[in-house]
Amino acid sequence: MLATLAFVATLALIIGLIHFYLWKRLVKDTTRPGRWRRAGAVAALLLALLVPATMAGTRAVGAFWLAWPGYLWLAVMFYLLVLLLVLEVPMAVARLVLRRRSAVAASIAAAPEPVLVGAAGTADPPAVDAVDQPDHDASRRLLLARGAAIFAGLTAAGVTGYGVRVATGPPELDRVRIPMAKLPRSMDGLRIATVSDIHLGPLRGREHTERIVAAINRLDADLVAVVGDLVDGSVAELGEAAAPLRGLRSRYGNFFVTGNHEYYSGVEEWVQEVDRLGLRVLQNQRQEIRARGGVLDLAGVNDVTAAGTGLAAPADYAAALGDRDPSRPVVLLAHQPVAAHEAAKFGVDLQLSGHTHGGQIVPFDLAVKLQQPVVSGLGEVDGTKVYVTNGAGFWGPPVRVGAPPQITLVELRAP
Image 1 (cartoon, rainbow, N blue to C red):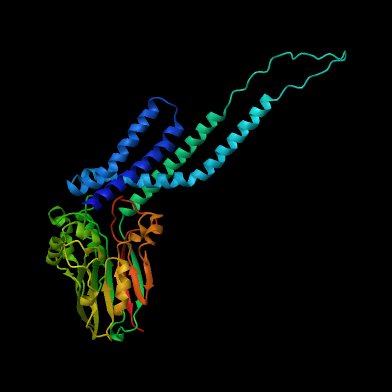
Image 2: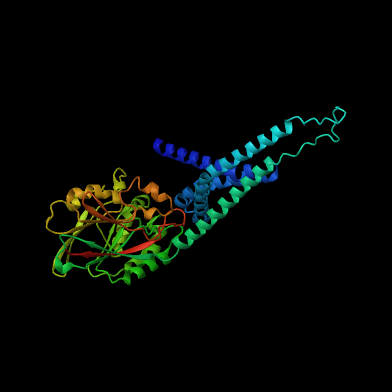
């Protein structure tokens, strides 16, 4: 309980500080005291409250109507923050130049006027008293602040709009060929349609699932692997949206492993529901895939976040991978790429994962790299090949920049 309260308090503090900074740069620095500044302060306060209200309301009370305005503002807020922080350096330089110009102008104005000596040796008095020139620096600083605010606002809105179009568009198809040393020659070219992070929820429903199922079925794959984060809500809320999964087609079976979001959404009910829809849920288990005269082990582990939740067994690599024929190739389905560190200890040839969304919103991918060994595409961890698909949906803001939604066709190649 205390940990939850501490997290909420920290989140509220961060959100508050971000909005205070945005108010300072977008409102206070660009307006003079008056009603417009007061209106901007009220708007900043309301937007700051909108963020936690969206996060809590869409999950706790099903206020899905908050999702679009709340999550869109979250994306715009993020890009405004990034852009304004980047502009701090040139803005500081520009302000320094203005101050120096002001200081030079003040010193010139304060210097005594030269005295002209007439022919008779007497000083000629100035004909007109010096008139103080108006100080334009305040107006220039205001103009500079407004220019930065307009640039940041238009850029943030434009990038967010582009990201919405990409995120809500059809998933791209990524085809990747992965050599496996132990794969029998007869199984060369075995194809696994891989999808993750569908994220059915407040902003994605049945139509989203139907589009993904149709795209996978067009691939005519040998296996289908759904590697976690199918939903953001309960079976009661999203069971109808997930129903099209029943239509998935493959030659040798459709399989599913849990992601971290299943543990936020009623994992036991979803395991039963996914199984009812015809996908075999691999909960720390493996399945022999006999095809084309050869055998491959397909294993699956629960998500690493299962540990300590009390909702389902934690990831158990020994149960899924131990006591097997080491001469066989093995493909592991694990939601998070970080699972490869444990999987490599059991000689896993290939791990298929999701979770990262490819970073979803640049430059968030830089932060993801701090936690996950592979963010997108094919990599290697301790001798185990790891392929990470970008995911077919999104979480939070309906925005993808630099990481389009994706379905992957993995083709296994024999040596």
